[in-house]
Image 1: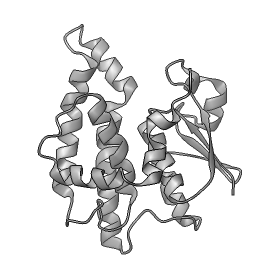
Image 2 (image 1 turned 45 degrees about the horizontal axis):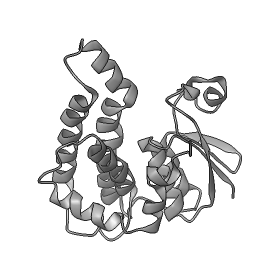
Image 3 (image 1 turned 135 degrees about the horizontal axis):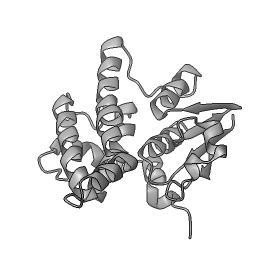
Image 4 (image 1 turned 60 degrees about the horizontal axis):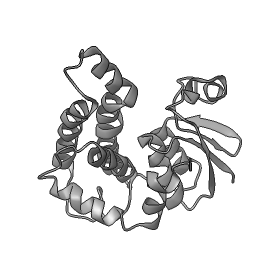
Length: 209
């Protein structure tokens, strides 16, 4: 099996896949796509991802987009299942994942935040935007967590954890208020001990100047 990840080192969605591939023990290579220079809008990236986004992943000759779809494909293809067993736990895991991937992330996407700041006429900075929306979403996530297992859904790392790690990275990066998020803090402490999570950290894959 050959896996190529088209990646931007600070992309939350790409970060999810780096963790997923590592935990699934899949060998993968990274091809950087520089969002700051607009490389994602170029013809080469658009041929892989018509949305002009990252990540994309080539898996055994097939190009896939959308990080959560790729994560679920790994199970469907018999590689690794990041959803718990049973219809109700799977639905709850998806709901947690979607809080981040479909609610927090789209609003805090760099292009959205930059546009909001530009339209504010100088009354708002990027950090103001992030510090408003990230804590709001993470508080909801915290409330939705059940049980006291080491990870979001108990004793096994699931898709919800794959989404949480990059979002907490962004929260820390932008100085978002995470006070009171005790369950998230405990889960992150456990996740950050895992070698696959450590290896996927943006600092470990940032292209050298």
